[in-house]
Length: 288
Image (tube, helix red, strand yellow):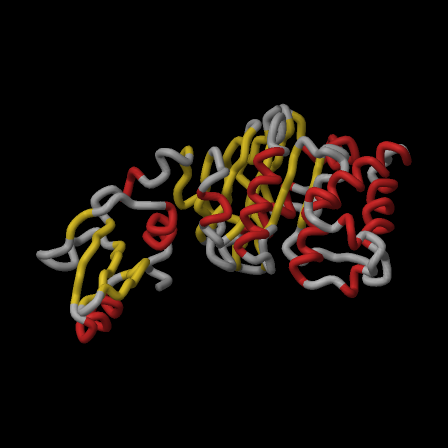
């Protein structure tokens, strides 16, 4: 299975939310990183055939998704950034309703709903109305509904919004366990959401691909550009005003700084191995 994105552009007046975006997805997990306003949501809505591009095409196995129509949407699972729900529905009724929209037979739907609600930790409260749920519970319900039809293409836009660290870790495990034979595109600005599970990472900036590589190689191009430095507390403001500081830690009388910079920030600074958060800050350092 191959999902090809060919020259996608989406303009709103003179502004391009997506600007000539091209890439190819095959089976695997793809992390889409970018700051707010980088075009991630617009791109995902186009891939889901909810939004039409100004120019460019999306192809599934060589056929435009416009021509595939409903047969393409049957392969999709989608969690939008602002997940909509019916507040007076119970979680069970909501999941069963979505199952019917996807055309699942009742017995299969019941088994699927039970399994998914159990996986996201909502089975025991399945008969409670969604409006009584916390934000994190509603987000977990959103994750469950995106998997209801066992989709071959899973699009997740900010799926861990509102989840605590424990819930985010569980979400990553759910996605990893359900990734076989699927194309999964996970958009986020939380680096740890994709650092451990993505096969390939794409950094998106101003509607375009800023950087793309397999997870194990993604940080190679900034080797030599991340530094560790100990300074006195009175010197901290000097460095934070001049450089992108990715981490700051107090050690007894001094402060240890982790700095992302092409140039050595100080004679006493030493190079350290870059991580994905360093790479993200490197690409968005002008915004800082």
